[in-house]
Image: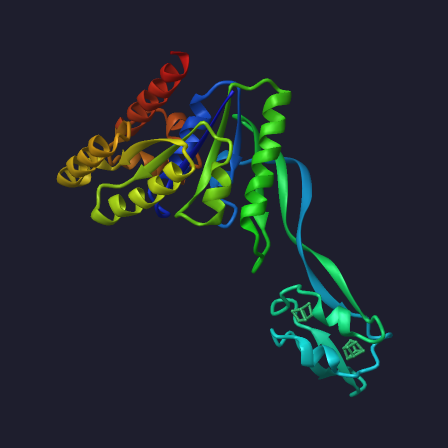
Length: 295
Ligand code: SF4
Ligand code: SF4
């Protein structure tokens, strides 16, 4: 079984469109969306959720008003100004915790003389196992203002792997996060190789290089795809040169093709859309990847 992750130096380079196309082309696979901060593969795959689970991460302080003696010690010790002094409906003084400001350090709960402060686990999002027209799909949604997307990415990957092993799959195809942050790093662990999608611009090359350095740092094999290569052939040549100089396999180039946009509008992958130059090029890229695995 091979695990591949499709990533990019920044958002909007066509990463999810390519992942969706691979979902159409690959046989016997599990798909996973590890771009949990801005998940959008579900828009293409239209999953039917079969199992829904809470994602718990971190703790937040909570004051039991019945036990609170209003001594004010929690206000004094909280370095994050998370304890608020307000008034209840009867106009009496009341101590509450702002859950956004609370960092969950638990200091207040240690100093509270009446044990009125409890640390409660945060529900930071949800993760799902779904059916799609292309097969099983593991994905997630991070709650608003929730952190720990790296932990959620690791969970999505782990569940995708468990499912793939159970079903004896040949591939796990993962839509990774853009950039070089924690979710990308979490999506790299245990994978066979990363496919970086870039566009032919100077900033595209710069961003791709940054993410390639991250992948190389973890000693993971990396390959590159140039999307919309024909929009700037001069820059495409520079990226080809970069690949040659840095020993990065360039596995394919995808043309700018309006059928890509039309396919998205119809909620289809470019493969389902049925025609277009980009469709042929992505199919050729997938064939190349498959042949490499058969060697
Ligand atoms: S330390 Fe405890 S008792 Fe004192 S104000 Fe805070 S919650 Fe109330
Ligand atoms: S847990 Fe820490 S951050 Fe949260 S209210 Fe208590 S002292 Fe402040």
